[in-house]
Image (cartoon, rainbow, N blue to C red; front, side, top):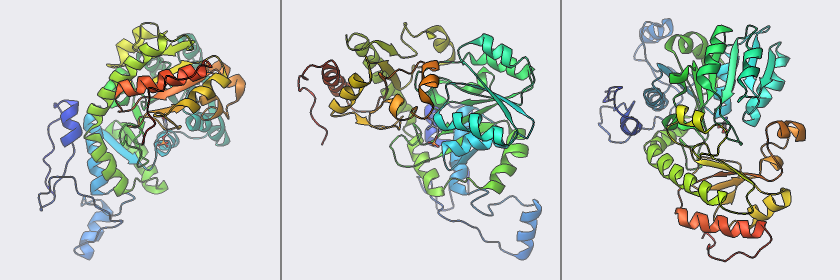
Amino acid sequence: MSNPSPPRSLRPATLLVRGGTQRTDLSETSEALFLTSGFVYGSAAQAEATFKGEEQRFQYSRFGNPTVAMLENRLALLEGAEACHVTATGMAAVHAAMLSHLKAGDRVVASRALFGSCHWIVSTLLPRYGIESEFVDGADLGQWERALSRPAALVLLETPSNPMLELVDLPAVADMAHRAGALVVVDNVFATPLLQQPLRHGADVVVYSCTKHMDGQGRVLGGAVLGGAKWVEDVLRPFLRNTGPAMSPFNAWVVLKGLETLALRVGAMGRSAAAIADMLAGRPEVVRVLYPFRGDHPQHDLARRLMTGGGTLVTFDLADKAAAFRFCDALRIVDISNNLGDSKSLATHPATTTHMRIGPEERARLDITDGTIRLSVGLEDVEDLMEDLADALDAAGGRQGTGAARAAE
Ligand SMILES: *Cc1c(COP(=O)(O)O)cnc(C)c1O
């Protein structure tokens, strides 16, 4: 295999198309799909040398695979990380990043506003293994300071968070976390590697669900963990090799091809999201709009410091559950779905779906109301989306829609 991989100084849009590519002797243009579980050895001696670690080559796709390696190298170049491992799902990435590093007696501090399954790992799984865990309000530096005045092994946070798009002052929290002895793990799914680079703001490890914007077309699941070469080699790699949450080469190939258009998609979806946030803010049915790059976002200045764009999600509140349901049911282009980052625009009612299990008290603490809607803005024409949303808001407010939006084929 030859490596026409470009140098690291290239810009993200170029890295997304060319980074990490390894060509076989057949000189194919597009990344090859190595749909194989194993690899053969030329001799018994080569097998022995490989198992001794004297020869570096592919052995078994649970450990590594050429298509998977291309994706890992592309993501590492994009993130500016020394090393990357991809996993079967985003949750496998979060789980591996945490469990590979932690042991009984350790302490974890996490922001409360986490993706549901990340919240479950911290609140329910870790204590079963004798790992103490504590949640703080991510936007409140005083709470971080108190929690990190005692030693901690790991800090997990999500910024911007799901679904309220709350930010964490990452440089400040990373500083406190490092003084407490903690590894700082950031779930960067909402920002994508294009809009925020947590490693530059003090994070040690970045995790992704490749299921979201990276595939971006609703086809496959995947996850990624990125960090320093030593931590990945000594801590993460043995855990992944032996516990086996490997990404399928087929899924890696789909994500590789998805990445080629990531900058175009995130750019277009972000422009539409910003326009839609402004449109929603002007509607009488909408009680509150949250979009990090709008001047009325409570952490607007922090968003401008950490991010280079406001992202592809908009969260807003309608009066109550009934209005939110009327809104969702009246949508004719936007689908009701709990996925996000897709080329299809998707609306979620968190209180009855993604954030149902955490209960009303925890939802109140996270500021999720019964009227909250999370909108993942896709690639449809923004005018069509705005007409669909306007009609659905008419319905939410108890009025007939104008009928301007046509049902999707
Ligand atoms: C989707 C998501 C995950 C989990 O990823 P899966 O690929 O669904 O396992 C974790 N964190 C965030 C913020 C997500 O949006």
